[in-house]
Length: 287
Image (cartoon, rainbow, N blue to C red; front, side, top):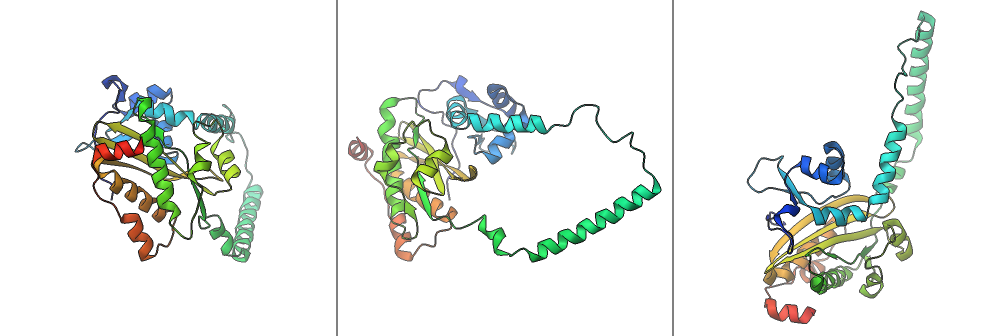
């Protein structure tokens, strides 16, 4: 299980980058509180919870929100336009509609007939159609993780974590994982998530970020269903840098569990195989 997220700000960020309430987050994004809470739940917006505090107390970092919003700006704007178009016009209603006894009885009979027809239709629909929309995930691509440390010289760490996740997940027999060489061509791409998935021929994407703060590392990973852009899993992982091998193993196991891959004991052992590393030696290896 991932450890609780600590409140260490990303490297290179001032305390002013942190937004300490839903109200501040909403004001930063120029949206209302209800909208940003829906984004956090449905779209995986990076919002953190305070440790040992009341359950509703949250905070977020401006740079993380900017990076997240940049990948979904067009999709969220389209969603807001659709909601505005569907809003009922003022002054329109049924207050002035007159109902006669005959009209009311006719509507009741029509409603009953509609329910009967709906029940018959449902009984004739094959049960496997419902399960088809939640078909088993068979292919996956790990998008290059973003470096949110505020230091471009730390890009090697995000690239190294990307390569490690691809290597770990590629060991799973029943899961097709796109190679690192193919994935690195999509680093800083302007293509949308559905376009990337269509180009690669995958049904699921892994998206995430890495933040380095001294000997501390935080990884955020989330799974996205390519066809619908549904964010059906998102998690933060915090570790000391010497435990980076354990960290990437935990992320790979969590992803395998979420895509419902049946792992053999040998595959589980390979994914869990990790240990402490010498931070200086591992950093030199990545560079």
